[in-house]
Image 1 (tube, rainbow, N blue to C red):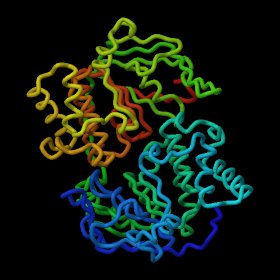
Image 2 (spheres, helix red, strand yellow; image 1 turned 120 degrees about the horizontal axis):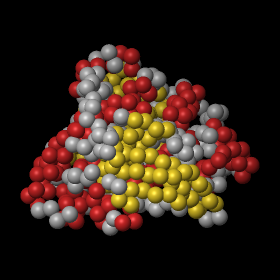
Image 3 (spheres, rainbow, N blue to C red; image 1 turned 45 degrees about the horizontal axis):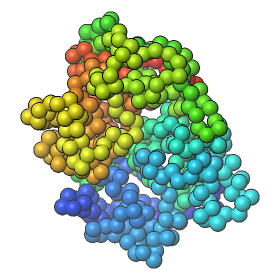
Image 4 (tube, rainbow, N blue to C red; image 1 turned 60 degrees about the vertical axis):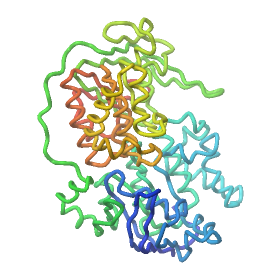
Length: 476
């Protein structure tokens, strides 16, 4: 991709400390990133990765220390406009940065603010749509896109203005394989012509960078060429960056008894004048004590299947049964007690002022007394590497995405449902969290829980699933 200017901006971070209340998020970080360098940042959930990159364009300013981009100080108001022209940032949750009604307008929005000439803007939008494979989405409403589709659009909308510094917060976490490959190939293509700061949980992605920086407890603990850093695998496992290599023999206790069965589901999405057949005669069965993983491209209908499993959506045609009883014959509150669901967009699931209030809400709906509820919360939060006393009074908004995802899962697990649907459960999770989740899935399998796991993470699917189904264009 051609760029409208030479790349000159060096990033200089000196003794950066960032506090949230009385909690230290970043602790005396000093880093210099040369113009055109490609740097990956890794670390466990809560290590400070997202906080660090939010300092790069002035979304956050230092409690102490300094951050400068091309000589412009992010803490000086008069210099902030120039900083934000130089630095483009793609957030971890793409919904946080959607501003326009349609995909085409979303891509043009930034160029309009930069006063591009209309003809040049149209050419640039066309070029970007082609580069990111968005031809079929151009006139779609941004609100009607799948999480993976939104992620592609968000990346393209920042990319289109060719900022000197491109900051990406886990850009492939919700993308299918083709989308992930496209993003990584695009980063390879601009190597040296834009500075790239790329937060990731993938060592494979980190290996394509010039430099790998690992954070722990808000401090830089490893920094060097990726091929050198990854040689200390034991240290990376300890830091929650690499998965354990040991494997557990999978239980063979899966029963043949059906838990949830879907037959010939059809679902039509109506978006203004547009009608999209999202499901086209999809049938699947979840068995007690077994895991079905559903994979497939973004927009293929995976999440829509999950929403039908606890009647968030009702099919235009088709039938669902739970333990042999038709959904229509089960009261909706009972159905959603028995079928737990974790959302891909985890913020949709967290609404309490504290972690405990969020988890307690479901327990109260089931009339479970507080002592028993606290016992369950302590058990499951502990299993998810969120110590009860440390997290129970935390505000969900202050948690990292990986921590939020684990809290949302704990809120489902404490209710002890007989069926659990997890939508992209490893998105935003560090390696330690993914390893813990494998153990939890094995435990639930042994208890006879039926599970549907919707995922782009083929490695995780291979570790936990008894069966894997692929969706394409609304069919299974």
